[in-house]
Length: 220
Image (cartoon, rainbow, N blue to C red; front, side):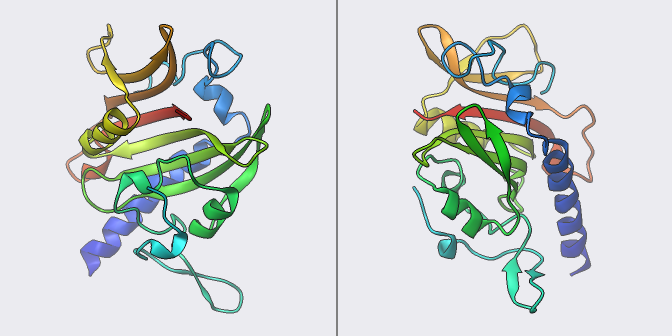
C-alpha cells in the first residue's frame, strides 16, 4: 500500500511539472507548430534541444479520487487511465469529450483560429506509459486539428509503434546521437513530429521518467 501511494505521488509530480510549465497561452507557439504546411511561423515542430474513440464512461478509474463541494467523486486529476494510447492520441474527440474525461481542463488557449484544451495525462503505471501535459486544438467546426504532448516515459516503444503504424510517422536521421526523431512529411516538409531523447539525469528510483517526449501531431 505504501509503495503504491509513493508511486502515485511521484507520478503526480511528473505530471504536474510539465502541466504547469506549459500552462501559458503561447505554448503552441513554443512548440513551433508552424512549419510551412502546419502553422505560419516557420519554426520546427518541437523545441530544439529537448529531447478508436471511446466515451469517458468506458475508461477505468485508477488513482486518487477528487470530490466536488458536495462530496461527489469527480475522478483523479489526471483523468481516467487510458489502457490503449490510441484512446487519447486520436482525432475523433470533441470539447465535450475532453471535459467529460478529465476533471481539470485548461480551456483558455486560443491560438489563431484554434481553441486549445490542455489536460494532465497519466496513461498508467507500466514503464511504457506516458505522464505529462496533453493539448487538443479544435477548429471552428469543433474538430481536432492538432494534438500536442510533452512529458516523460520509461519506455517509448509503445508510443513509437502507435505513431508509426496508425499515423505513418517515419524515422529520420539526425546529427544528434541522443535524439530519436519521427516525422510525417508532405513535399519534404514536416507536418507532424515525435522527438524522444533520454532524460538528462536517469534515476533508478524514477523508471517512468527515463525519456523526454515531445509530440506534435496534425490531423491526417
